[in-house]
Image 1 (tube, rainbow, N blue to C red):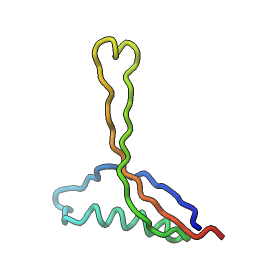
Image 2: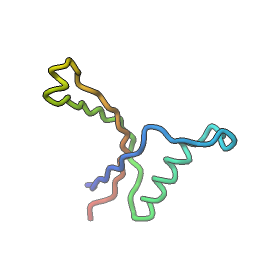
Image 3: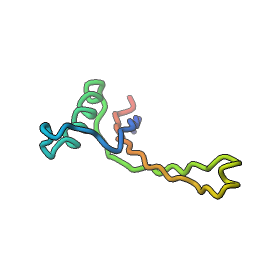
Length: 81
């Protein structure tokens, strides 16, 4: 059996044009995973989670619809000793 830990990461990362190499997302995720690996956590998977935000009462009266936001979560796990 395992215990799991979820780490939310930003949907976008920002780099300066002169520093752009094309592998920034991989390097960012690698750093996050390696940081948690030092605590015994192993990478398991990455998921996209959609969260629907309902508008407030007055905004709904004005016709505003639910807003869907996507979040990215790295799932880590380690044996449950």
